[in-house]
Length: 87
Image (cartoon, rainbow, N blue to C red; front, side):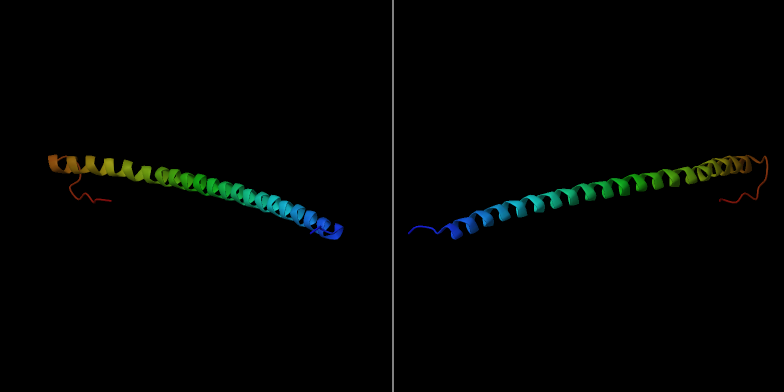
């Protein structure tokens, strides 16, 4: 059985359309992966900045705890105030 010219053209057009469809689908898939990576990178860097800010805010408490320890030592040795409050 011999293919008619119209059938051949339709078959070629269908193959080309399938190839174009796969090409654009892959491009969109890769663009989505790049966008996801950038969003994840921004989220990770923001959370590390927040962690750094929390540590920076927590440092005065460490200093205060050191001062409290010194005050407790003074109180236990009898020098300085005896009504020491812990934080």
